[in-house]
Image (cartoon, rainbow, N blue to C red; front, side, top):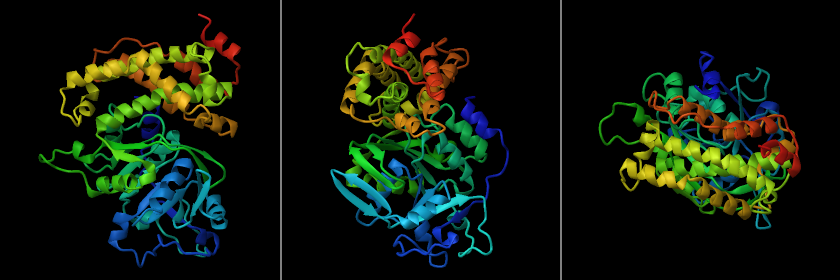
Length: 448
């Protein structure tokens, strides 16, 4: 069992009751009332079904909030922030600001809340209110960093059920894919069908932050949505059973925002796309953090020191991905192929797709496209943030190699030991915040 799963399951405490704080609980009067807002007395059942909650207000959260809320016929949107102080900062701000092609667009037409176990005191300027008015969330978009995404959703599980859909828009691999997603759901939602529906949102857009609620939309690209784990897959339901309406509704809210260039795909398609993005993230993010350089610094010469180190990383990554495709535990994903191909045929195609030479070509082409960007991990270490996504990038590869080496889903039929020492070294350097030049990098990785 990977460490993230064991740490989540160590506690048997019930899901906590959370309270929704707003600027009003801090005694702050808002100059404008969001048209997204409604009081408990006026909220209708339709509001709960339509309302979109966005957890995390970093670059991706701002982007999705802005372009979903400002399109035609938008849903009501509630932003959930992670610190009380952000409520006051929001109250004094102009709302979300996105700079795109030199033009600044602003929007403050949102509800904003801080969810906490701390109940507002009786003397607060507004009455205490439970998160989601004590009901269930129908539509939740999670745009936090990968390392906190599932723990935060786990904390909110009191407000999730089989009619809830949660879309995850993080870098790194979703933790709810096979082989561990079903184990998580079974532990946290013991009755089959009680858990939430998980959707993946692979986001390729590039943004960088310029303030608490402002970002520059620097590299427009696209996004891909698809199911990871639907509750109908955990039930002994009749043939033809369909997922709850919230799955299609939340997907539509994202794909209908034209500027996001988002499309809906099968589980297999988004799984493969996420794995390919992981290949890029596990090379570019940690090495730019270690070398303190923009992405283009890794690709100045095809056989330079960074390229040689990335080649070693790709050797291990290719072996892991090809072994993963062959593992029986992934057959439910392969079976979602929209073209209805036989699983052996899909496996053969993916084995070639994840070959080292093909991954190298993809990495170098992708890296040169965003050569002027600063990776998210570089931004995190420069900002002095206590954690990075390294455990969700390279750490995922290490965990997967251990799973496959132990036999995977077919006991005793593992792929043998896969050497992931290069990824372990990278994790160690990033977590210790080591800074190197290329000569030091070569000595550390290329001396043998």
